Image 1 (cartoon, rainbow, N blue to C red):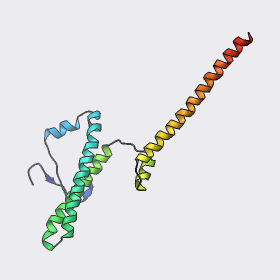
Image 2 (image 1 turned 90 degrees about the vertical axis):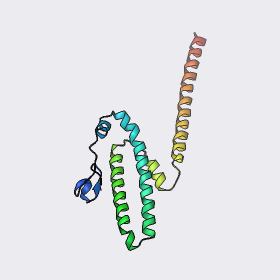
Image 3 (image 1 turned 180 degrees about the vertical axis):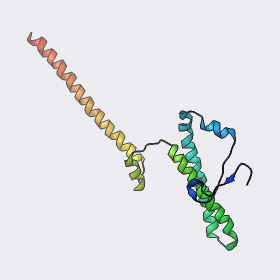
Image 4 (image 1 turned 180 degrees about the horizontal axis):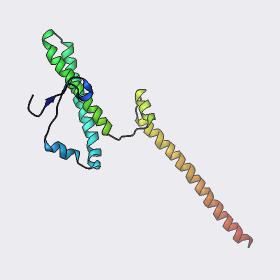
Length: 154
């Protein structure tokens, strides 16, 4: 461990794992950036965290599938790395302000393509637009007919 890292037995939920902490000033400067910068960075950071977690899970799978007593230390290190990355992912998720309709979540959970939701919303919007267009056209026709009738009877 280098001088920028410290050991914390009670930090991050008290799980007794190593937590990387840095006292560099760029970290302070990064926290003072504007909200618009953070809103742009958070999704990309979350994607990177997801990819890193998948890599750690793959390494963990390889370690577990060929487990012997000599691979216990690497297994524990990879498990600690996974916990750290999941904790990081949880912190990033709290900062992300992405709203998703529950219908999309339900479609994904059902194993369906979320593009179906988008297609259904667009088709519904087109149908409502056509209905509204028909109503406005009928009002225009009624107005034109009323004017024509009033000039014809005058």
